[in-house]
Length: 168
Image (cartoon, rainbow, N blue to C red):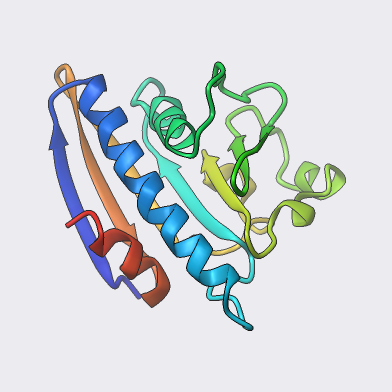
């Protein structure tokens, strides 16, 4: 069930990074709130699917989120490693499943260990891991629009709705 849908037209990469930073602040607020409760709204961690064609800006948007969480170093696409972990105020895992040959490979790498309360998982190309990934809390569709991007952010549950409402 789609709860909230926000569409933003962004003129350039700087605008994409600014939106990602703004989203990271809302994510941090929600994760802090969630960790103070006895039962998590995000039992699999907070899971975000990033959708879009090659070069649409999924990794750029992930970099903006990571920087919003305080990461200072480079953010590379984990295309060959499949996952890049970041120990920040919360554990953040950036997945790129583009080169995944078989979704069952995720089981061999211990995919279930990444999805836990208090974790944030950013997943590019989630369709390649179908059947082994949890349901997303937020789906972000990124489409190229000349030098800019159109971002369609969709909350998939009520808890994620609070996050996106902070952006509206």
